[in-house]
Image (cartoon, rainbow, N blue to C red):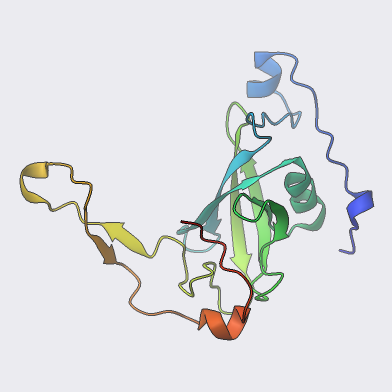
Length: 168
């Protein structure tokens, strides 16, 4: 899988009709105004959501060419291959696109310990919103409850002094 930057085409089919987009066999993705597609990534075995990210045309083309998940990092403003630093590469077993071709679903097997979150948890969705508030009144201070009880790895040991991608 030695695909190089110059050998990856980022050109996709033109969108010529609703029928072609919704019922045809042409990959003709609709990138948003920022040139991005939403990507939902799930564990191929359990079906659990591991993360939600975005791809630009290059990330989509590289993912197809290498069968390894590539994303566009909005916080770092660069292309990144999941696992390039940690070794926790997402091997794509199946890629689906939604009806109007503006969202991608990846079913992956993650190398190593199967961790997908840079914080050290298995999934980026390691907390849930407490929906048991009194009388169902929405609150801007809703509590977060941990679904995953422990980290699989220590982020400092894996990433060292690499900048944290989370922005305030």
